[in-house]
Image 1 (cartoon, helix red, strand yellow):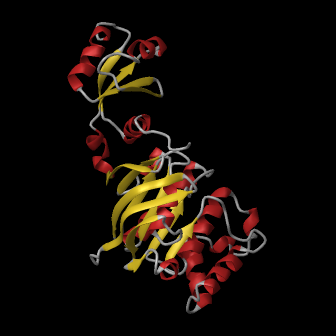
Image 2 (tube, helix red, strand yellow):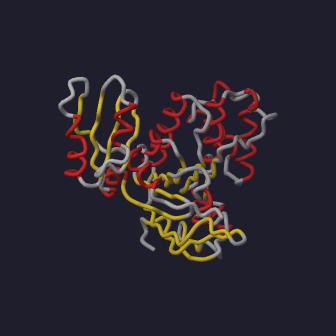
Image 3 (cartoon, rainbow, N blue to C red):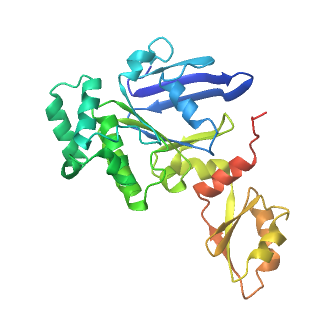
Length: 308
């Protein structure tokens, strides 16, 4: 394994009974990357991440994480990973400080008191150090959970839908903290289905129904999907949507606020489908940059459910 490669897995497969939840998954993750796992609920994101990091034994496949074999050295991997779940999993009847102290004990952190004090300051939790954790708002619980999972300075962080149910300001603050960790060399794997979070990631793997559909730097995703997009603005777009839905050259239509984003893989055919509308004075039609959301919808539309 390259010294700068944190995860290198091949053919990962997970079956529960006769259902294949993850199917022949390959991935290489470099040190310090923020890697997003994007897909609908039940797509296999969490299962994939847990297998890659030794937290769940695969049914097939092989690989390494932090230089350790994901099957034989699972305990060594676990000791070097910070794991933050979607649901707040710390002790609601303990204070913020007591929760951090407990985590420091669990990981046998040297100079436990000093480490807890430093973590309180680093995550701006010091003013709430004596507050009972169960009384914190969603955003502060999230901040405490991140502090607890990173207190032992793990080189790899796993974040499973970490910002579900928190306000936009708390989500932005959370991502600022994640970027600081990554700048310090920490590798971060995060599962999400929020597009505004996906764009914060350096690279993204789209996963649907157990299969990886695409895996690339975030900036390259739209180009790799190969969609061309046009934006239509006007007062009543519902008839336009119905008119274009099955038109040749139109692969998908999505509503974005007061506009329609019409996309297709063949630019000439797409423009031909829109040509009859261009003479209408009540419509504005122009090019639009294909974004992650259009790419995501397109990839999901072409995938097949593995639930039988």
